[in-house]
Length: 252
Image (cartoon, rainbow, N blue to C red):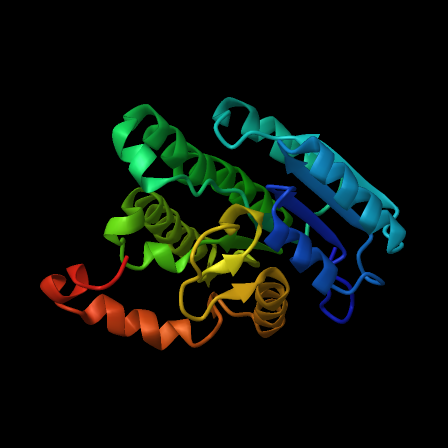
């Protein structure tokens, strides 16, 4: 339950190995956090993160096996987390980037990526919303991407999955209006993480800690959407307004 000064005491991370999610957990006041559930596939990474959180004084840290593609298992995983106690913040932080050229030549791999990034998110999002609505409070934080604002030739398969996720998350937030629960959609640009290691950096590149600071500030202000960094909001508005012929000539 959120404490008397509005700070979260319990967090469920879907995508427990996410570096951005890890940074968000570090940015939240450790003195207030009492319970963290890390759900994901990267068990070794999650165990390291769990040990780090316990070292910060958070005694109740649990790791759970979770696969975004295994939608049949999502209801039981979400229910187990909420049945053990109220959840103040749910971080939807899983996702697959993929290689555009490889995905174009392997439709099955493209479908697998979209299943993880979009179908899996719809599944857990609806299960989480059901429980947030029942408990009457809580925030679902969805890590989207500026790639979903307008899909580029260089990553349109990934971008389309994020576009779907973003639209879903916005609609889910509207559906939760008046319930006491809400959704925060986070649209980072290029973030320096293991997933992007070796890639050429895009303009306004940032790191996980900077994104985390923006997310925590947005939560405190009750925001519904936020870009990370903030300069990407006007940049993406301009890009979305470009004629298609001009947009196609932009560097990938």
